[in-house]
Amino acid sequence: MFRQRLASALVGIPVVIAVSYLGGLLYVALITFVGLLALREYYTLTAIDDKGSMILGFGGHVLLTALLWLQGFTAFSAGFFAIFVFINIYWVLTYPRDFRILSFLLWGFVYVTGLMGFFVLLRELNTGFSAVLTVFVAVWASDTGAYLVGMSVGRHKLIPAVSPKKSVEGALGGMLATGLILALLAPQLGLVRLPALILGLTLSVAGQLGDLAESALKRWANIKDSGSFLPGHGGVLDRIDSLLFAAPLAYLFFLILT
Image 1 (cartoon, rainbow, N blue to C red):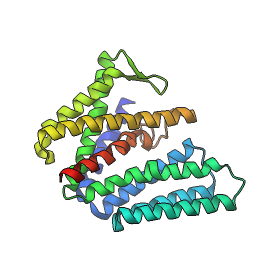
Image 2 (cartoon, helix red, strand yellow):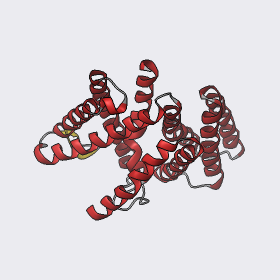
Image 3 (cartoon, one colour):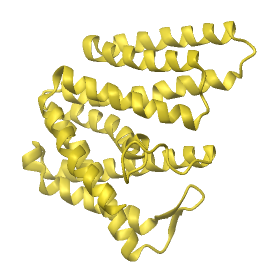
């Protein structure tokens, strides 16, 4: 298992960083592709398996991501509400389908497409690559710090009903590790040390909440891993759940300070 995780990381991380550095169409294509994989897993968790719903979901994801990149957030918002109308029409035409399918589809656009879209917005900032890299570093530092501290001194369960292995000590360790690493790397990331420290603490909390949110979804669906796309890591959602919650806060931070 460890070797599989290591191999996946050694291949995947450099590719993601290189594509993020290049930006442009290749970067947006990667964001779109990862989003499609995450949506597929999300549909498995929410039992969306009919062809019509999946076409609406995947097609809507590609459309919304393209609108966000080409025309900005206003076009994305208009596209979202247009898709809302189409999904409602689809539900009426296929009545008496379970109304929850409509809700799950819309939630997928918010949870996956919308939150992934912030990586498109981050890359479009003047400090685009540094902003994206900051989110990656923060989440990786938080995950590593939480794991090491939790395994070493973790005693008090965080939210055992959702994730029995996570501890309060691990969560605090993740926050501390992220704050310190971003503060140390602040000059390289184009940041000032104190704001970088605060940003690190904030992104660690957001990332850990994203992890817990996906864990709760998997427990609700009674599924251990969201998928098996990444050897040793589980599914794509298992790898990006923290990033999804961290990205909007990072975007707000860089939007205000740059």
